[in-house]
Image (cartoon, rainbow, N blue to C red):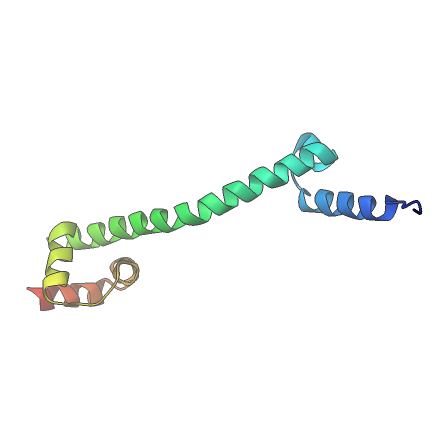
Length: 114
């Protein structure tokens, strides 16, 4: 069997790993073993936080809707209940945007519910 020299491939792998950790602090940007571990952890965190971001945004929308609704004299829970009973198909993302940037439209929606 012939001898295989893997210098080219090893260098390519090393450069790829170190390119991915550019901007990291301390040895994680320059030492191959630490960089590899940093990439694994970063990937795990990124995966988990993509899921967390969705719940975080929903909580933020609820806060914005509640603030807008309370300005107009109704609580968040009563507003959502009325929306469901009247079969208004606006989701929380749209409602929060209306409450934050288009308060007149949000007020008109509330007026229709009453």
